[in-house]
Structure formats: C-alpha cells, structure tokens
Length: 362
Image (cartoon, rainbow, N blue to C red):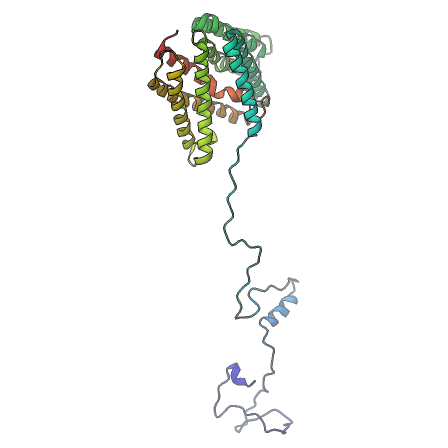
C-alpha cells in the first residue's frame, strides 16, 4: 500500500522512499531539508476498532455498542423474529359465557311458557317471586356499596302483594297496593335510629316503583282472554330487541351510543334492536294477538326497542353509580335477576298501554 490511498498529494516537495538496501540511520529528509514522518503502517481495515477499545475502557464501564453494520457494503440484517406484517387484531369475544347464558335462558323460557299457558295464577306467582328476588338483590347492593339500609321485609311483602293486586284488581289494585307498600316502608324504618332515615326511605320508595310497580303491568296484561299471548308478545319483543342489539352491535358496532354509561352499546346495535323488534312485532300482532294488524306491530316493535334500550341504560347507570358489574350472581352467564329484568320492567307498561289502545283491554 502506498500513501496515495490515504489522500496525500504528490509533487516536487513530497517525500520519496529510499533506495532498496539503504538503511538511513535517522529521520528521512527531502532536498530542502524538511523533516518528514515515516510511512504510515498498514492497519487492518476494521471500522470502529479504536472506538470499541475506547468504549471498553470508558470510566463508566459501559459495554461497547455497535451502531451500524460491520462492513460498509452490508445492509443491516432484520431479525427473523421481527414481524414483517402488522399484528392481527384480536378477535371479538363475548363478554359472558354464552353456553351458560343460552342454557339459563332456555330454562327460564321453559318455566315462563309452562306456567303462562297452563295456569295463569302460577305465572303470577313466578312474577311475584322474580320481584322479591330482584328487590333482595337491589337492596343488598345499596347496603354494600352506599350504606343505604332499605327495609326489605315490607318491600318484599308489599311487592308480591302489588303483583297479585294488579292481576286481581288491575290498575286500581296496583295503585292501592303501591301506596300501602310505600307507607309500610316509611313506618318500618322508624323502628331504627334516625341517622340516614331520609336516604333510606327515599331509596325504598324508588325500589317500590322501579321493581314491583312496573312488574304489575305484566300481571295486568294477563287478565284478558288472550292474556297469555299478550304476555308472550311482550316477552318475545323484548328478547328479540336485546338479541338484535347484541348481534348487530357485536358484528358491526363502531359508534358508541352512550360511552359514559355503557361503553359496550353502539348506535349500530340500537338500529339492530329496532329492525329486529319491528319485524317481530309485525309477526306477533298479525298472528298472535286477536284483531291485531301488522302495522300496529311495527309501531309496537319500535316502542319496545326504545323502552328496552332505555331500561338497559338506566340499570347500567345504577350499576356504575354503585361501582358493580352485575346486580347478582344467581343466573350463570346473565348475572342476577335484576340484570334480566332491566329491559323487561320499563317495557311492560309500554306494551300494556299500546295493546289496550290497539285492540282494547279484552
């Protein structure tokens, strides 16, 4: 190697190598007497060798880092484990155990259908039992999460009596039973210390209206001759609305309906609830309800989708305030009884009223 490869210029004043065999004793001089340096020794072309050595001797003891490829004409090698494609998004999963939910749903449907078409009084008993269990779940969560002591005994007894009164005496009996139950809650709470009395009885009055009073409209739907078919229509439309909202929202849902209340609900799911409920309503009014018409079923299905969605959002608001996911654990895959009644309770008076307007009280 000559020094031209290091970029030294050639000219008259440049240093010249000595003749072969000559061994100068001292430093080499040119004709002008200027002292020149010796030829640079050949060093292996290993980039960053000095830097690596310096890094090893660094006072902090840091290990040497290689910031580039070992040779200039090589490209950095991509590790075999590095993905060349964007990661596959996770598949959507249902939030609950679908097998358990379907099994429990089928079992509940069998109990309801069997009691509904065999003996009406048995079905009224099923509704009253659901009301009592729902009140127990609601009052238990209020006490656990908020320290609100709602007297359960007058609520449970009065709630069951309200359902029976609605079936026997219809609206008049339901109103009277509600008033008496509210009074019983106020009096029962007086037997305890006055601290928290106002919040306890306020929550008790809310519970009276929210669970047993709304449930009395189911019993009132049962009183006409075609009462079982009216109740079946009410149940089918509510279930179909919830199913349509879940199926469409799970598959196509991207726009949140009420993210601050229930992040899982979407606008697409609401449209699915409306479409499914209106179709089911047209079929039910045409084939199940005496003197019913398909266009009435469309209106009925639209109203059911709206009330069922609002009822679901209403209980979601309550559960968010309480800081819980479900009201109970009695029904695997569903939560508690109140988690199944959330859509049914506010829908019952809507269906009862529209059926009375469309086909009369029977």
